[in-house]
Image (tube, rainbow over all chains, first blue to last red; front, side):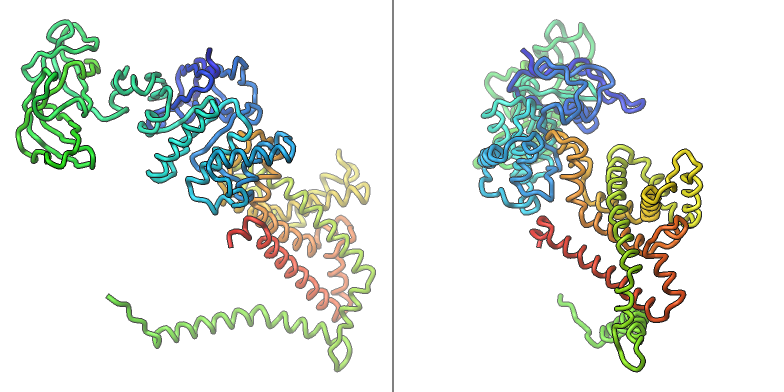
Length: 348
Length: 271
């Protein structure tokens, strides 16, 4: 049973339609990410859920209640912003208590809740501090505590990690997910960072041009992209042009390969391959072996990404770094093996 | 590589800076000192505070000053209540209208006060649809409206500059997401964060109201401005003493602003 339902949402700013026929059901306690490039409409969808934007058409319900007529301060949401948005004149404790005070909660209850929330975010001693005395990561945790203190029906996270440095971002996303799981709060998370979306979410909505291109688990989004956009936006991939050779078979570089995706009856077809699905050298179980020339070698620490020219295509390969096996030099010829089941059919 | 300092070369530049600074100080200070010295000369051949005593003991001074202070406080409150929500609304919802609003708020600087005053009197006289000049109380209300109009350029700019230092949109949305309505946002979020800007606007308004003559005279109200003009016409030392008192009040306001800024908890903590 869906807890939060968005039905045929549309939003236009003048002649510019930024959200088109967007529908989504979110179960209670689910963590759903809206992932997409800038301008794809993900933040607009979030702001419509929050009540900061009125949809041009469509409906939004929380637990069966139509909230379209409710103002943002009546929707019982918790929201965390990219810019933290802590009130500079209030201490951390006063910030966390703000929503409780507005709701008329007793002082004793406020105090207890603030203590509980500060313990939850791991900043039990920061109550008397002012926001500017905290680091970015700490400020964002306080913002999360403030949003959670009022026990919202839905938690909305608007790119909360974007302003933080890489290391804090990784630790905080784990922390946010843990807190979300512990409280079982229904959450919508907006991000343009695929790694964040894939690592944190129960489901990911990949958006492009105002529409939801695919709604699926991170595993399916990555391994079974529904559209060419999803395949290209989520993760790295190489594209290959091949010819349909028959039902379930394509011809590439003089080799016939069996593929699992739906193919057109005949003619050219575009295939995609993840870098981790291509291997340098012959590998057991990889029925396709191609000849290529090494064009680029990127050393990334634990992984080395190698680009090889195969016919007209440029294939990327990720191999684990091993101290006793240096990568091949640029310009060397190499065999590349892959399996037809790893090829993703993108269309003609 | 090391940098070489040439003290001999920087000395003449410093000297010119000090000369310029000294001239500027003299430009402002000499007339003030002269005026203060003159205000002490009421008793022949000896400095005394007689002029000050004469002014402070004048019942008319007390009543007009009190009247103007009350009017200033009313004007400040009314001005903040009008300008803060308006400036906030323009920033959040009507950012495209900001140039127009700024232009409108500048009009009182362009249109002569006497024109505005006559406009008010014509619109709100006893034969108009809203006869505000019909009683002393309603005329006082009309006078405070006039003062708000005169102070609008300063009050709007002060508050708008204060709001510019904040991420108003996000703070408003954060407060709304926590259940706050507009009044709570204004009073608990915006006002404390633009308090020093509001105080600056309030101080300027206070100064304008205390010295304002045209509105008060044309509406025939017993304000401090007309009193200063009247006393200046028939006495010698008392106007100088009054001017010094007015300066002292102005400086006192500035000190209060500084104190308020320093004592604000989030500002104090920054230091």
